[in-house]
Image 1 (spheres, helix red, strand yellow):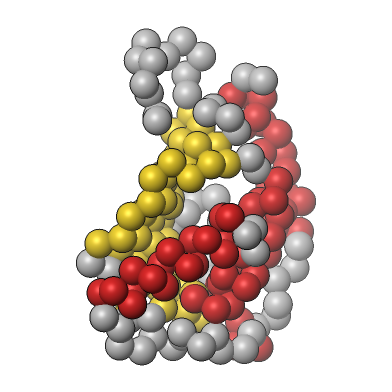
Image 2 (spheres, rainbow, N blue to C red):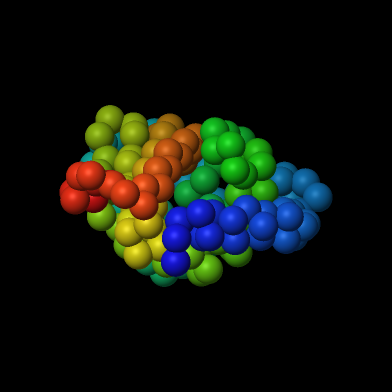
Length: 158
């Protein structure tokens, strides 16, 4: 399947994804044990980040991952997703189980965690970046790149 077809299908699904109503008020979502942020050592932050990534991508449980590790004041810098924790949960509940992906790299340094994903069987690379404050994920950025049909570099993206 060509990337343009995959992208067209994904973009066509966005109205359906966003039609899922998030909770009326993010304050109605119970506070997770890690949020609001509490002081954490670098080792504790490392463990929190990898537990969050495992829950999100391996166990495919974005609701538990976000309610456990993500701040109610979460800032999402993705141009494809609406703002806020509740909106992220609604978006990811659909996206995570419906998109084939493999974690290629993951690392945590300082207060920043990074996950490099192989998406749709190598047709796209996604890098998710998360910033923690103490025990709590506060911000997210993502960068994605499609593999061009006539890529000259056989090692592109991965």
